[in-house]
Image 1 (cartoon, one colour):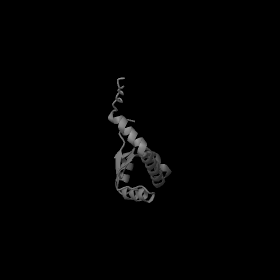
Image 2 (cartoon, one colour):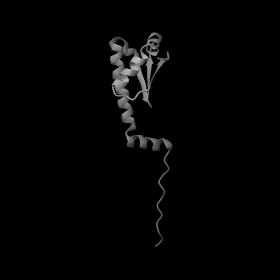
Image 3 (cartoon, rainbow, N blue to C red):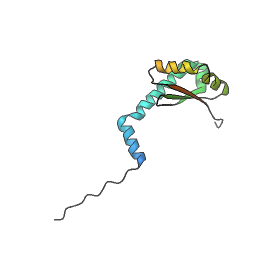
Image 4 (cartoon, rainbow, N blue to C red):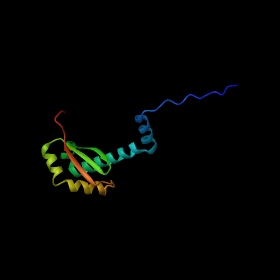
Length: 108
């Protein structure tokens, strides 16, 4: 009898491979938990009046990116409240080395 050859598995795209790695390592879940925690900390620090006007866009490699929807809040966060936020994120257990603030685009 002739030996049967197995068909090679279909090639995976890079995106599929990366999704598998993220899923296997739980990276997506960990990042999502970090973002939720950062949002909670931001809301607590800004209070109920200002919190609806800012959001945590991302928590990646030690950098928390916060978006403000007004120029005045952007200036406040970019200026004298940046260190306050950095300290608060660290106290909450996030390994943060930098807080970046950006102004939301007016496309909303």
